[in-house]
Image (cartoon, rainbow, N blue to C red; front, side, top):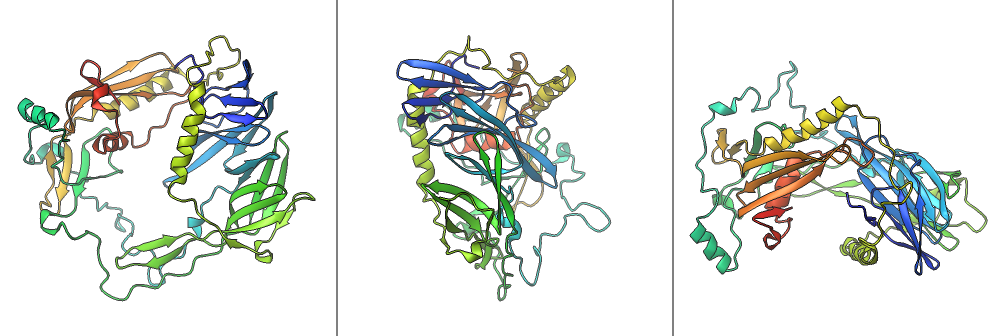
Length: 470
């Protein structure tokens, strides 16, 4: 990790600018030519590695929010969060938010609420309950998975093309300024496949029906979707800048809170999303949100009954909002990148988590195992060729090394890939976060495939000595 502060945002408060670090418990407070440090090494962190860090700016300071994703069973994930309120004069509070969702922030505090999504109150078809999505196991417990019991070594190999074009073909491609075409059929990864075993995929469709999609069509009148259910009463909590809390009982699920002067605007979901039939067997899912305004000149209410208040449809952000925020953030961070050295800043590091040597070794070995399997053959079947067969991997010459000492341990994977001719690709993965917790890398192999296949990697002109860091 760099010794320089890695800014995650820059928040202006009066004539001062607060610049928190993206991972470490420190912020630079800049006023003119003066730089002071605010640190919070003793602040609580979520259990487990920190998966996300966010900053919410207010007129009085910045809330730095840390989140850790936890599996709670049945394919459900839960985010636990903690937060720190930073002002130009120091930290005013550190708080454990539990599983609460962050809904907004203003000069009085941080708004948090129920973490559930409105989709939990979506209606079902009246004539079926996820028809066709029954449990994949029979009543006797036997699996219907066609891959169960299959030995990949016994499967025939599919015809293959050269891994890379010939040097002459590649030189001609570069001279023409063209990109190589991917002649493989579109493949859908099986997310349930083991990352460290054979790579399973399938392809739907054929050249004969390029003009047709592969979605099934209804043979009769569509089922009438049941109306969505009302969302339940929930608690809206204001965590004040001194750590105190004020709770408001709201009659529905709250999605967002913002304050303009003395007016508090609450966005809420009165019901779950509704299902609208389309031509296929699927449904369009339509979320409906509304807003109410509250005059809080005399203080916050104890309860809010949205049905008793004038409300209006909430306006969703347009498609450019995310890009506009990215542009704003890049502009805000530019003056502070690689500007402040944290080497001698006391309290700018998290205390290390107590993780024994065996657990560290297991974490490293697990991640290494994922990447060592990259060059294993794919197991495929297609509509035109429904029999299972093996196909050569898009990866070859895979090398996996481990660098650095805990907690800065990195797994470094390098390889050649069929989509990037005549270059070696390399990527680094942190095994632990700065506090020593094991980082979670779900579907890391799938994400690597997507980055390369979609071209979301560094330009090949950035390669050094034939190696491109991606």
